[in-house]
Length: 81
Image 1 (cartoon, rainbow, N blue to C red):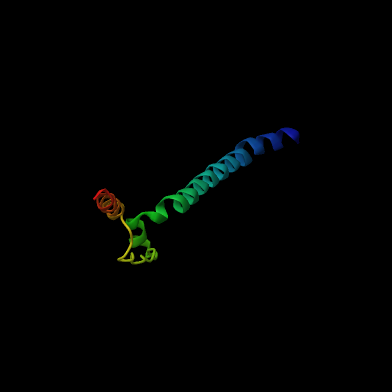
Image 2: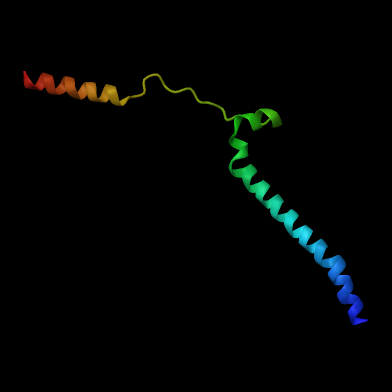
């Protein structure tokens, strides 16, 4: 009786468990790739009809570094005279 269980285990349970393990690893990998990378790819968003992130318009009066440095230059040149 014991040898028949070992034979059944060898031929049926081990292959099924190994296939289930490999499929679970593939699904976990796909899920992680989907959550971390694929959702942010525009082509994938277009294919699956996902919403794109809403783009906020940038304020027109935002400060830029060139404006900052130009203002500094104008202040130093005014203070030298």
